[in-house]
Image: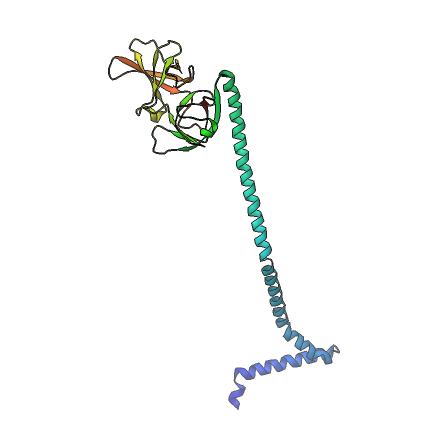
Amino acid sequence: MKDFFDTWKFRILIAVAVFLVGVMAYAGANGRLTAAPQEILSVAAAPFQKAAALLSGGASSLWEKYTRIDDIIAENEQLNKENAELRQQMVDYDRIKAENEAYKALTNIQAQRPEMNYVSSFVIGRDPLDEFWGFTLDKGTLDGVAVNDTIVSDEGYLLGMVTEADLTSCKVMTILHPSFNAAGVVSRTRDNGIITGSSEYAAEGYCLLTNLSRSTLTEKNDQVITTGLGGVFPADVLVGVVQELVPEASGKSTMAVIKPGADPRTVKHVFIITES
């Protein structure tokens, strides 16, 4: 029995008894002795009540979030739809803006050559393996485009010619390609030659005017235009300016290195000169 009085259980019992006696004494001194058991229970139950309130609030919040999942999903779907519509509007705006700029360019170019028929067209593709910078346009035979039609820039500079045409698109060989050939002339000296491309100069965006006489008076910055000879290309289409004169390998003639007025490597919009 003596061992029991030395245990921690006995000490706890004494502490509880002292606590209860203290509460009873306090209640008696304040005239609240009859309410003491209720107050004791209230104090003891308070932590449990708080825990229950927290659990109840958390469960209520969780249920509210769960019941709003459908609303949130619907809101997200609506936002995604509105974003898609806005993106499409931006695409349409960019297209209309580009077309308006093209029409302004068309007004200028038609004022210079009113006898020609022009089809506005955008570059929609390039072959990364084509070292001569050929490209594909978004106009085809349905728009009156045909093989051998002339391609010019917004400012009217020669860019190339149509080599393939289907219903809604066409492929262009640029003036940088060695297979390109057009009769050309130096406007100041009237020296005639052949406008063509070269693998040696294509990377720089330059083309050539070959078969000039060795005694040519052509100089740097002279303007080169088409002659219309052969009937493929219209006459007096601007090509570019002479950068330098180089003797041809045969030694019998000279060629002029030309910087085109419009760069076929970077052009995004063009005009196709058509028959009708």
